[in-house]
Image (cartoon, rainbow, N blue to C red; front, side, top):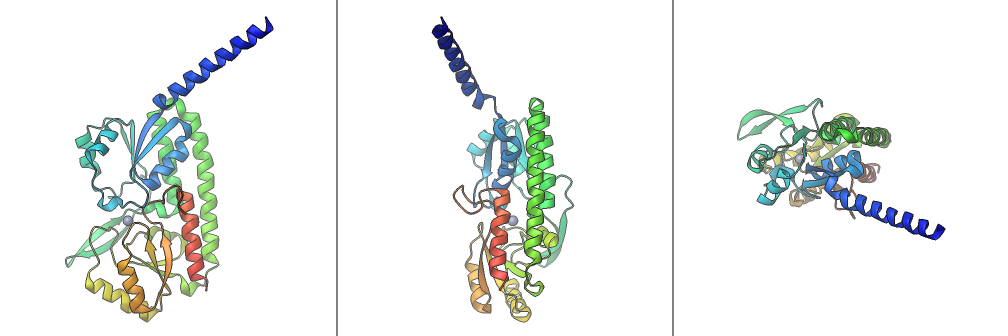
Length: 302
Ligand SMILES: [Zn+2]
């Protein structure tokens, strides 16, 4: 009698496990994120309830992305689409329209104070919005809160889960922000000027006290002109700027040339607009900051 009961309970458990296992992936909220950094943030807040697919993957350049029919099909099947906004995904509206996407679009940077700059494109000055707001961890907290609210609006049953995950994540982002400030604070102030290939670290520089000079503008779409490069080479020599940094998403030949002509050293690779793959040094948003700070500290402390 006792044995039969045990067997029955065992069978019931197996059925339950089987059901929950089978229902799991079908019941998950399908989310699409425009690029890898945002994809990780959605995973952190969504946890087990959300299945996240990223359009522009590790080491990919979202500025020059062109979506495929497969991307459109994937978006069509999603409940929610997370984008950076601030003009980062110039291809986004066309993709939304062509895919027939009917879900919610959540702009993660909503509420961020945007940085603007004047860039000269073909001799005409133009005011440009800098989209790289995620490079300031204070903005990262705004992103995480928007992701939480977007997931709750899409899947109200998961409210308590998203709130708990977000609270933990917001705490971790705040702690990383303190660590970044502390690490930069230890560097000699006269060395806090660096060169990167495109202007992706404006928010980072403004938040943590680093001057960033970039031959390319805030997008990678247009190449640096010969005059821009000559100007930067003069500036590096005149101001004795110590190091230039390669980015994971861009070709580094231009920076190699600048380093050769100025004697500035190549300080390493910074992760700007994309994460590394899972086995690389920056598989998550917070790992990206840890890696970048380690690279900056190693290159600028001596
Ligand atoms: Zn960029």
